[in-house]
Image 1 (cartoon, protein in one colour):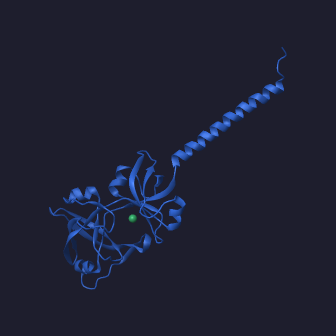
Image 2: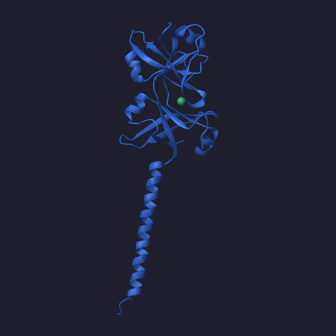
Length: 227
Ligand SMILES: [Zn+2]
């Protein structure tokens, strides 16, 4: 039998190599997709803070007192220069709690689960603004103190989006999603609420406990894996 011509062998090898290369490229692309696997969202880590009514600002800092701006935050909010001390029922305190402005219709203290243990209070995990029946707490300022019968919560994690971003991600205000963070710990967060508003900048908000436990830093990326 005549041996195949060198030219023909070359053509066969080439076609096999092309197939192998094509398969490798496809696998690499699929792996990348699995890694990202969804809409990317920058993470913002929220430290403990307090929102106050104007009446409560004046009770803590004096009559006519106005909060002063330290740093702008999203949605027209700002970190104020002013800070307070919060005190739990067992007289355990946390100092230097940042006030976020502008003033609101109801005062609200947002702490981590670790803070709640330190303060000796049972704060529920709630969405911002949902404070009915939440934990009581005392607040101390340079000119006075006040006692909140309710208002102390552990903020539920959530993602802020503009309407355009929500449309891109195929999500709506009030939806719940799961997100994945790929780092040396590698964590999936379930029950993440989507909040959509024109004033919002795309950001997932978690508290310091969640960030520390999952080795996440401000500006890290989360991927929405389940709508
Ligand atoms: Zn938020």
